[in-house]
Image 1 (cartoon, rainbow, N blue to C red):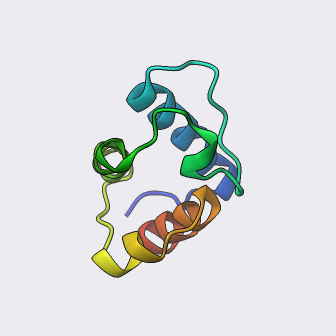
Image 2: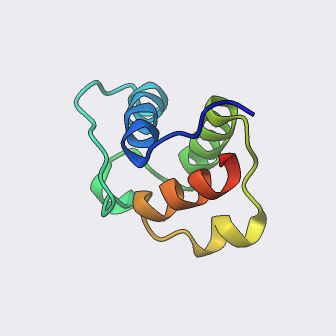
Image 3: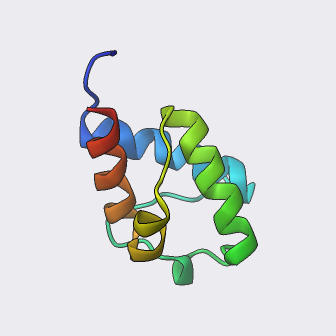
Length: 84
């Protein structure tokens, strides 16, 4: 297991993933970011996004987590709980 990541580091990586998936260098996600805030974030892109996040962090989301995730902050919390 590598060195534990800080929440800030998780967000830095998430920004890269989001920019990559949505092909938009202007995206900066915060705790409160939701699909409503990003124009191209629909259900199909959500699947691509989750897959990219899983690959980036070397973890897997459970279905329950995916369904209950309300914003990027919750996504970051799940990532942190999985990789720590």
